[in-house]
Image 1 (cartoon, rainbow, N blue to C red):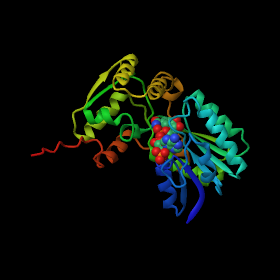
Image 2 (cartoon, rainbow, N blue to C red):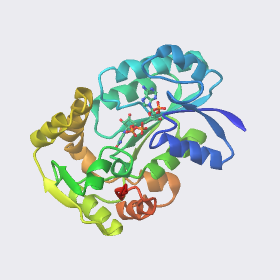
Image 3 (cartoon, rainbow, N blue to C red):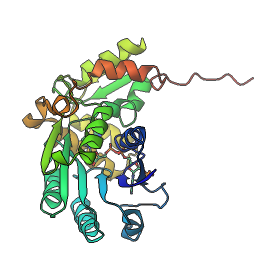
Image 4 (cartoon, rainbow, N blue to C red):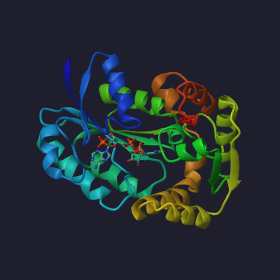
Length: 281
Ligand SMILES: NC(=O)c1ccc[n+]([C@@H]2O[C@H](COP(=O)([O-])OP(=O)(O)OC[C@H]3O[C@@H](n4cnc5c(N)ncnc54)[C@H](OP(=O)(O)O)[C@@H]3O)[C@@H](O)[C@H]2O)c1
């Protein structure tokens, strides 16, 4: 059954899982992304109306991050367009301890449209579907702030919470803070991945300056470097981000997934094994 639900970022880390979970409930949401049909592009407002047409509820994940310049304006324009087109509810994925993300939350909260804010800590899936995957594959992980405690949360849990609050209006007007069930360091995370994958992974504690220099040498685009540096220097070290919340359990009635459970589920996909070099004769 086609539905009147739109999932913006529906092919991404949490969005693709929200789509799957809605499909498991017999709901076929529309996907909002550049590769979807109709195509939705944050950088081209002309694409938005077609994606939003006939939509009543939407899950919004902004890309690359609500903290980047331009995000606030984009969320504002989208929220008011959604209201104009008759959208009744917005579930916004936000980041814990990000002042810029809170400014985006406020736009949705004050829009007059029903809403739920899902504020998440760093995702486990950054190790398997994002910027920490390449170092894991190389066997050499060099990161700053190796002693900071992080309540990594699983994208499956975020998606289950997001699809629950999307469908259940009892969560309207609420801010749900979701974290994993434990605080771990980068080094702990690497050790757990090494153990479940039976690989030797070396961890190096470096300074933020060295990390940024490394990204420059790899010719990573400046806006990506800016975002990663911001996440390390402002988000990771924010004391509010080093706390565990029980909201996953409160919403789902079961504990949040541990990093070890995530690692055990992920290792069987083969994603953490470098492809073997094939000898060409
Ligand atoms: N990663 C974390 O640890 C974390 C933690 C807390 C909060 N968050 C928040 O989660 C949100 C999503 O971050 P993420 O890292 O998980 O990304 P993601 O959802 O995995 O992002 C990829 C998705 O965005 C779409 N996309 C990329 N560029 C687009 C564009 N110009 N227009 C429309 N769609 C576009 C992609 O589809 P197409 O390629 O088809 O366009 C894909 O669906 C961010 O706002 C971030 O602040 C992330």
